[in-house]
Length: 426
Image 1 (cartoon, rainbow, N blue to C red):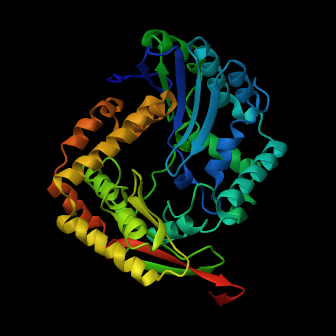
Image 2: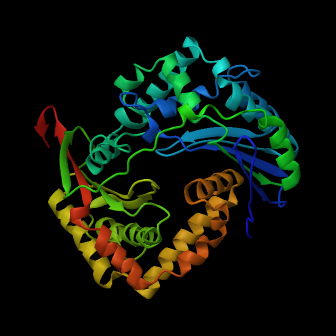
Image 3: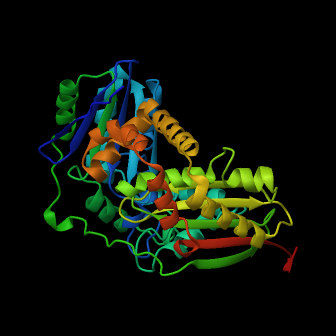
């Protein structure tokens, strides 16, 4: 079903996207801001993610955690996430509760700083530091992706650090840092608001004007400065990590075209073919065939203002020869360039991406996020409706060309984990 989004710009600069869907009496609201970890000030990594948490700690008329409580009390749910290039706040509620969500979002977009104080900052700093420990620092292979990012992008440019940030930087974030960050990035003229569900677009526009219309854009002098782009490394970067891990591992990050570029879709299909669960690809070869690993995955990390990355993660079996694992990976990428992109294989990869795309659009929350991303990055929310047609039009030669251009040893960073116990190799 076409989403047919309608896009309007309010006098204060807020862009509103409305997509009507009367198949269920629910509505999703997404407040989307083009600010992420790439916008963290120097020496303050993790600030964008920390600020996402602070946005739930109250505003002018809402107490701490009152935003979540109000939405859950009416039978809905709410959450948020921070990426490299964006921060999103989304809620799904019964359609009759739309105005409540709009009021809540407007109150914190206009008045979050009224509730910011040392107690809320210290509390949420502890929360995000604990999240980092649970997800990265205290998990086997947990810092692998963080290391690959540092190896993939040159010093001094964004995208080298995870949104989670570095503990030593988070410890130095002050209340003044947070206030300056809010005034610079959390502005109506930078925000997108998407409403998806059983609604009338004109009625939604009137409600949004009622609750957000009084929020003026800040003075021009706090307009965020443009960030520099990222250059590709001149050659393959490599790092060896000896840690107490369950088994050896081979990880890599291949640089791909920025998301949204024409060559990006073909590269996405090449990654899908490389890491798919079908009769060919890394999983079939390393896990089912040669039995060198218990997991072999390739996935896409999309970036718009920098090269996207293909994340390769091979968890070898204990005692496996990592040199043989790498040799097998290279053989599979070479096969993909040569004879691996058949009509049948391409059709299967297209079907897999089509299913993933439809699954994402089936949920009103992720649908609203995708509409915001299309409008923010590509200037065309309606482009969502044409993605499947574009995907189906990609040819064998385009996928083969993408594989030969991007999935090569000279275009990647490599990290290997080797098992060590008490200072001695296993």
